[in-house]
Amino acid sequence: MTKNYYDPLSRLLHWLMAVVILYATLAGYLMHLVIDSHPRLFQFLSVLNMSMATLITPLFLLRWGWQHLRTPLPESEAGHYHGWVKLAHALLYGLMFVVLLSGFLMLEQDYALFWLYPITNPIDSPEINAFFFRVHRLGCLSLAALVLLHVAAALYHHGIKGDRTLYRMLGPRSGK
Image 1 (cartoon, rainbow, N blue to C red):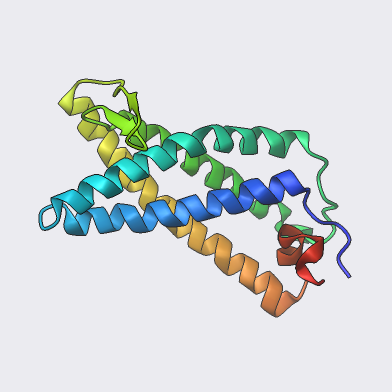
Image 2 (image 1 turned 135 degrees about the vertical axis):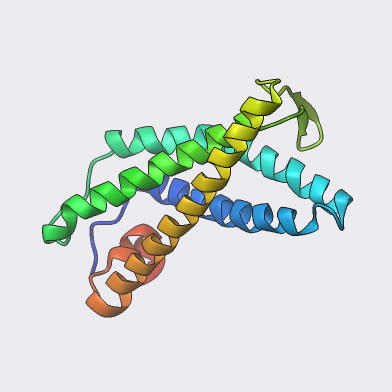
């Protein structure tokens, strides 16, 4: 039975980020499919995407800081892969930061946070906004690839190695 679970805050922040990243990835690519054919849907998804990113940014910063403050789990199961695991997680955090920052800096106009509170775009230069749009797009593709690798690794550990890594992130009520 697994006794070394991640703490509740780590688990909460992990799954919140997972849901938002999944939503933002799907919505972002859907927006590009409907930009010309359904402008109202595009606008709705755009404001929702920007609002979610605005709310998740402080949670991302909390999660990044918390990983350095919390008591780490024993590394016995990481073995010789520990360096690769640390590198993959550092890349995940780095890409999340790039995607969030570039998403904000690419804005060409102001938006209303959940249609209520005005947020001003910080840069009013089409050339700079276009640059950050390209950074954002590349960051999103890279993050999606790394998230798929992360999920594949979690499933490998759970299904093939049977080492309870997934249960550590699910918590004590996961049944294992």
